[in-house]
Amino acid sequence: MPEVRSRYVEVCIFRFLGDRPEFLMLRRAPGQRLYPGLWQFVTGKVRPGESATDAARRELAEETGLVPLRFWVVPHCSTFYDAAADAVEIVPLFAAQVDAGASPRLSEEHAGHLWLAPGPARRRLVWPGQKEGLDRVLAAVIDGEEAGRLSRLG
Image 1 (spheres, rainbow, N blue to C red):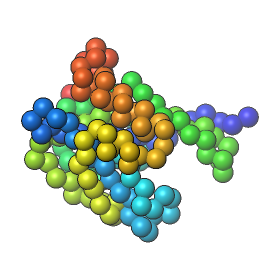
Image 2: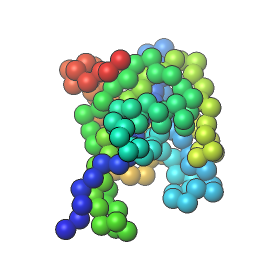
Image 3: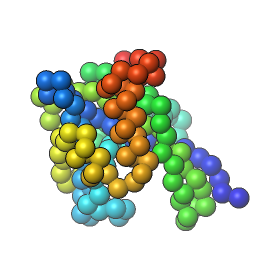
């Protein structure tokens, strides 16, 4: 039977230009072992003894250098099956709003970035769970569902 575990986090970063949201999409560097060239959110591993929330904040800083104005636990988790480990991974999603003029300082993991409106951002994502996560950020956080108000951390 596969093990069920949660060792990764994702952070969906957005900013507002006027009243329009833009999402930060990161392109994995060509030399990355997994998925070179893939567009994604901030994604990283949870370290031993670290909470998922702390890992999300750390990965946000390490991969982009950005400081969030506000931070949420999004009511969404992606899942995937790791065949090599015979494990199902559950990946919590966080959202971070940054300043309208924010510009990321990318780590070596990424070779490029784009700020995109919701539709183009969604089209860059490959995995269904990430697309669903973007939809949840739009509904719960940006469009103001009560879930977003209740899940705001700062």
